[in-house]
Length: 216
Image 1 (cartoon, rainbow, N blue to C red):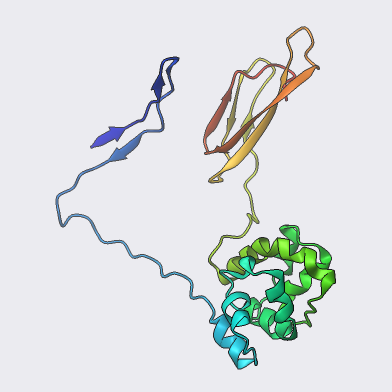
Image 2 (image 1 turned 30 degrees about the vertical axis):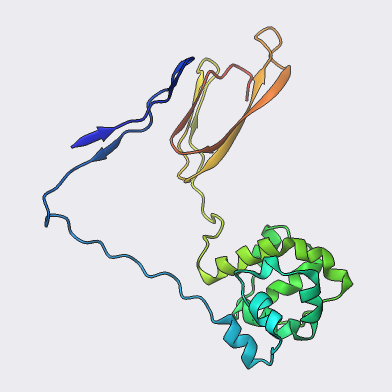
C-alpha cells in the first residue's frame, strides 16, 4: 500500500500536507470490473423542431440546439421569431423548467421560454432575456438529467466553536462550499470589523483556525 501527500514549498516555507491518498497495488485479475452508468439520453430537439415546421437553417442549427443556444445573435432570434413557440416547446422536452429559471435569476418576462407549453413571443420587449440564455441552457440540461440540481435536503449544520475555542470545524456533506468569517481588529475592540476573509471552494472537512472571540 502507498500513501501519498502533497506539500507546497517556496522561499517562505512549506504548506501543510494535503489529504493523504492511499493506493493498493493488486495483481492482475484480482480487481472486479465496475459497472459504469450510462449517460443520460438527450432529446432530439432538432428532429422535434423539423416535425413542428421549423425549416429555417439558422433556427435549426442554433435555436433548436440547446448546446449552442446561448451563442445565437439577436438577429437570429428575430428571424426565428415565427417559430418561437414550437422551438422552445421542443427544447423544454415536455418539462416545466420555470422553478430552475426562477432560481437562476431569469426575469419574469423571460420565463415564458421555460414553461414549454405556452406561447412564446419574441420582440423587442424580451431583448434583455438573451443575456440569460446561458442560465436558461443550464436549466435545460438540468432537466435532461445532465447537470445536477440544487441540494434539496441539505444536512444539519454541524459546527463546533466556543468562546475559548480558536478552531471551527465544518463537516457539511457538500462537495464544495464557501465560508466567510469576520475578524475583529483586536481584543481591545472586539466589535470593530476590519475585513472579511473568504475561503472559496473548500472541501469537507475544512478547518478554520485562528478564530477570535466575538469574531462570528
